[in-house]
Length: 112
Image (cartoon, one colour):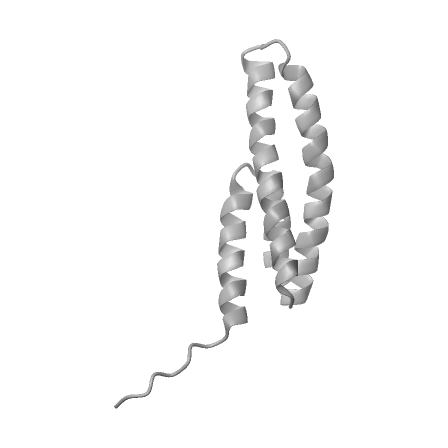
C-alpha cells in the first residue's frame, strides 16, 4: 500500500473532523444562543462538511480495502466522520497501526 493513500485519508479525517466540530459549535450558537449570523455560518459549514465527508468516505473506503480490513473496522472508520472529535482519535489509531505494519517487524538485536 502506498503512503499517499494513508496521507490523503489523514488529511480528509482532520478536515472533516474540524468541520464537524465547527458545525456543532455553529448549531449551538444558532439554536442555543440565537446569535445573529450563526445561521449563515451553519449553512456554509454544513455544506462544506457534507461534500468533504463524501470525499472522506471514498478515501477511507479505499484505504480500508487496500489494508484488507474486516467489515466492522471499515464501518467504524467510515462513521468516525459523523461523530464529533471521533475522526481525530480513529485517524491517530489507524495511522499508528498502518505505519507500524508498513515498517515491518523490528530487526533482531544480536547478542554479544
